[in-house]
Length: 592
Image 1 (cartoon, rainbow, N blue to C red):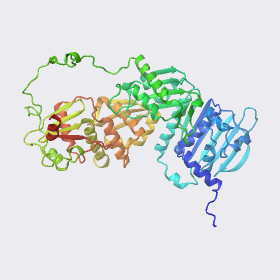
Image 2 (image 1 turned 90 degrees about the horizontal axis):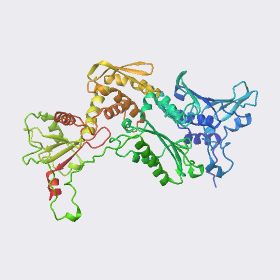
Image 3 (image 1 turned 90 degrees about the vertical axis):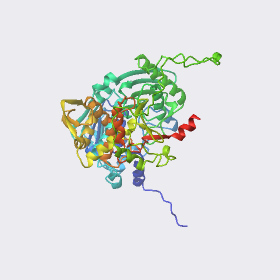
Image 4 (image 1 turned 120 degrees about the vertical axis):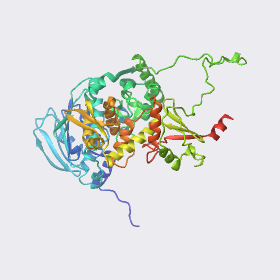
């Protein structure tokens, strides 16, 4: 019989394995820095060029390696962390599988030097395509330096999948932040193309957070601390008033290892219940210290997912701890303690007539009646609505029924500070004000980016904004797009000075709009077909009218009019339904 199964050559097997561990330059950064942390380094330098595509170098002052260990470290399944399977459940180190360096060596050119304190000379080794080349003595400092050059040089298909330099740099900064936050006891320095991006001295956790995210975050932090038999919890949560519409400031660490846990995130979200506006997320820097035997970290190649032995108890403890911290700092949900005594009817007095609520009712009031002073809405816009309206909730209403009496302006009013309600001849139209405004802004921004410039206004007093290093990277990438929309911005050091802005913006909250925009761009968890589309969606989200804002009748009418002047008015830019209809027949059915 013909043999069809064969064992893969070692270099091919390593390249395949690299596909699981090394996804992009940031993966190399993560693996190399974690090795330096495991080597007990007190200072770690990260040097990259062209966002890691040309060079990723990590230099540490750790314990160093002998020439034998240096050679073995680039072989598959060579590790100093494990001797048997049971050691998996006693791990305190970052790495343990012995796969990372071998995977990197298979898809890049490597030069490594290392020296132990007891050795007079260090050793230098060069590897290309997984094969060891030069090995020689080297005059070098105590510790280890590993340079990774030309990542994916022998896997062009993988290299072609890399994103722009700014996108790859953003991913590298993310990984750098995660490790730097986990280890404030280590000094970190980060260079990109010979420019210093970060210099983080040894400090407390709070100071490390401030050094990374700027001084503005200091007033937002609430300390969290609890010790139980299940886990020790420490860190900070961000005050609800400073919550964001993205998850960019959510960090979980278990035994100083960054993890992603929707389960534990839900615990914190539950603790913030009643404190956050719709669509906003809590920020936190939470550290859990647990018995290594009670967790399993060997379930994902990147080791960012963890299984807990006692999930339910941990969930309850974390939720209670965060709620307690919020309470200690007098952060409570707003509760209306006033109650109309006529609303509750005790069971034993059920046959008695309940007390009539002490309010006056105007029997002649009609919310849909036209009143003087109400501005007319463009008939063309309303005609457009009913010529092509399609909605799940209005599927049973015929096109003829979806007609307004255009000789009269439809009456509008706001409900729950969230919905705008107006009348149809056949019933009601209920519009989500935030989604409607998102659609309006999105189409305006997209039009200005692709064809016409938006009307701008010069600010009497320019707005100055201090940016973090990561925000500076994002500004560099999107500066031209912001200019096309109507922003005139001057960069000075790490600060922006906004001199002009689109006229549709409220100049009082430009700083919030810009910072929330960068946060949303960084999060980037929505679909887009182009850079202009992406930016238009992000801007429409951060600049839109939010639920909870009271609108005047005039503002409501303008919003409705502008919505139905849009090319696509059924859904918001994020594909959520903007409005529903409620027919007379449906009302009759509910009230019969």
